[in-house]
Structures are given as structure tokens and as C-alpha cells.
Length: 111
Length: 115
Image 1 (tube, each protein chain N blue to C red):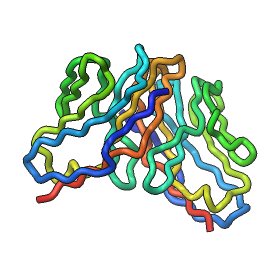
Image 2: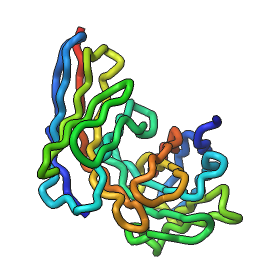
Image 3: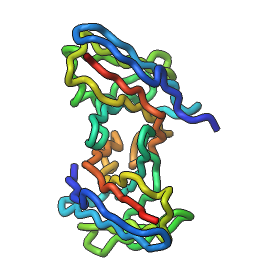
């Protein structure tokens, strides 16, 4: 299973766009890239998933370059409530759909 | 739709005691996962069920941890005997199929403190 590397922490201010980049050099051909968000005392929550190019939903965008060795989660105009830990996961191509969580990126949004 | 339910939310025990956690997945979800999340770390998969069969339990400490999913719905995770290093949040998640990176829906977790 591909290992992911992402920054341990990031700071931002309300209203700014935040981009969190994840490296996954050993991604397999059929692996998906998935991002989860976790607030304190809660379980992780699915944000977005993609395979290649760009995916956008109501809360975020996911940019994946052609070589798929990295991906960038983009959060537009963050608010204080976006303060959380963000996990980048790569995998799911096997029969089990197994995903491995790394340490995640702690995003702190300041007023 | 109702989310993943877990109980209890908190549990404090002494080392060498036993403890059990319960999980009720989202209705219709075939796959159920148990994760252990130690403070400051990402969740670690302990066991994955597809219906009532075990798909992956490679990281489950089988000398002290056990899990079952009777009738392919509810599941229980047991620790016997507990050690200090078992202090963590135990998360249950479920998904439709379990393959191709299906979205996993997590419960609120059970925070276990072992004294």
C-alpha cells in the first residue's frame, strides 16, 4: 500500500484558500486518492475522492497531476469551523478496499 | 439516514480487566471496520468484516483482542486483558461494499482509558 506524506500542520486565516499537498510516490495504478476530515472527539468524515485530474464537490476540490504521485486538497475561503485534521489516503484498489491513515495535517484557521 | 452508532462513548478500566465495545453500522452496509486511534495519530485498522466474514485482521493483536459480527450487522470488539497501551479511541466505520475505496462512514468512537 502506498505511503503518504503530508505536512504535520498548517495555519491560515478566515476567508483564505487553503491548499494541502500530499505526496504518494508509490501509488498503484488502480489506487484512489481520498481525503478525510476529523474534528476533535469525532470520527473522520469523507471529504473528497479522485483518481486523476480534478474533482470538485460542494466543500473542496482535489487536484491530481498526470503522474498521480501527489495530490492537492483545496479548501476555498476557509472559516474557523474548518479547523481540523485532514488525512490523505491512497489505496482501495485491492479486493478489500483497505485504506491506511497517516498522521494527517492539522489545519488551524485563525480569525 | 441514521449514522454509525457506537457504545459506550467512554470507558475507564484498570489494566488486566476486560472491556467490550459495540457498533451498529448504517443499515444495508455490508462492510464494517474497527480502528484504533491513539492520541495524536491517525486511525489504524484493526479488523475489517465483509458481511459476517473477516476480510483483514492483520493488525489485530489476537492474543488479547477479538471481534465478531454476528448475522452480518452489529459487531463487538473485545479486549481481554487490557494493557495501558490500549488507551485510545476505538472507531467503528461502515461502507456499502468494502472494495474500490468505498466511502467509509465513521461513528463517534469509544474513548478507552486503561489505568
